Structure formats: C-alpha cells, structure tokens
Image (cartoon, rainbow, N blue to C red; front, side):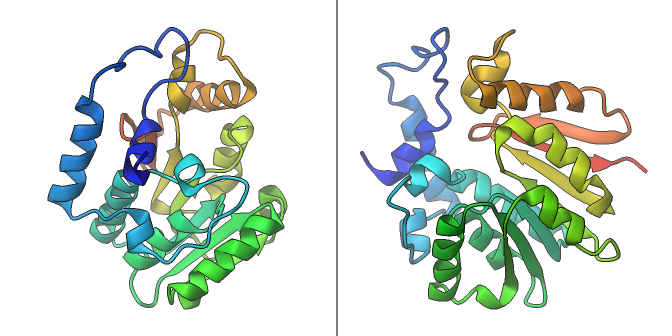
Length: 237
C-alpha cells in the first residue's frame, strides 16, 4: 500500500458499527490525492530524510501530512514563534513545526521513550533542523513542571498517551500565551468517541477530553473532522 494511502486510512473508523462506511470506495483515497497534489503536499518520506523505528511505522504513528500542512498554515498566519509538543515519536510532526516557525522560533518537544527520542534527534540532524528544536526525554508531567513559566508558548500540540489527554490540557494551560492556541490531535480516535462507551482505554481518555472541552465556555474552540480529528481551542479573554 502506498505510504500516503496509509496516512489517509487513519481517518477511517475502526469501530464495528462504522467499519464499513467507506468499504469498496476509492473516494477517500482519491480525495487525499487531489488535496495533496493541489496543495503541494509531499509524501513525508520525500519531504524529510527519515530514520524510522523498527517498532512502528510513520504511517501508523505520525500525524497526517494534510493535518500537518494545516497546522503549518496556522503557525504562519498566527505568527507562532514558540511551540510545545507533547509526544514526538520519531520527530516527524516536530520537524513540520520547526519548518513553519520563523528562523528565531523554537519547538520544545517531549518524548517519554528514549528509543524514539534518539531516532528523533538523528532525524532533526539529518534534516538540518536541530537548531530550532529542543527535545526533552521523560514523563511529560515531570518535564512540564520544570519548564519556565515566564516563557509562554504560542501553540501547544498534545499528542501523547490518549488516556491522559484531559490531564495534559489542564497541565499545559498555564504555559499557553494569552492568545495562544492549544491543539489536541486524534480527537475522534477512529470514531471511538462516538460510542457511548468507548471500546478501549485510549478511546475513554479521548472522550474524557472531549467531554471536558464541551464545558470550556471561556475558550473559543472547534473540533475539525480533519485526519483523525483536530481539536483547536484558544482563550476568549
């Protein structure tokens, strides 16, 4: 299967009650192709020199390239200079952010697993982006406690373990600039959040965040059906 098709397949629901929604149709893949072609979005394997993990492929774990282009667009339009990322994996999304921030911008990323962090660092070097990225290894909650409170982030991207999405949002909120943007990736989790009782713990965690977000009336917020779901929110004040 083509890598770009594998990225698009992340949009397809994997829950039993939704699994056959697009079965037998090439529409979704064709749509992905035309969006990429017209938008100048390259396959990530062409966009970057990528060392991959032998545990998971980029197609399995990394964010959809269309979603990444949207976030790059947002970074440029909003004048984002500092990004905080929770969950780097092999650094693919981190590099998309680094390419979008200005030359004096910075991406601070946190990756729990040292094996992935080592690969990510090599990828940053391979692509000449290491000077714009600061990667911390360790538990995100412990690292966040050590980050200076007087250096707010213009954009916070949450893509860590989904069981704790709500906790990440609450923990990083004090680090967000007054007009900053918080983004939660995979907010639909393959359609599991549509179930009254999600099928696994990741779905439970993602739904808990979505239920929390529904109460955040002091935020301007929107859930977008882009890729596996992107949730954007910014303080109203």
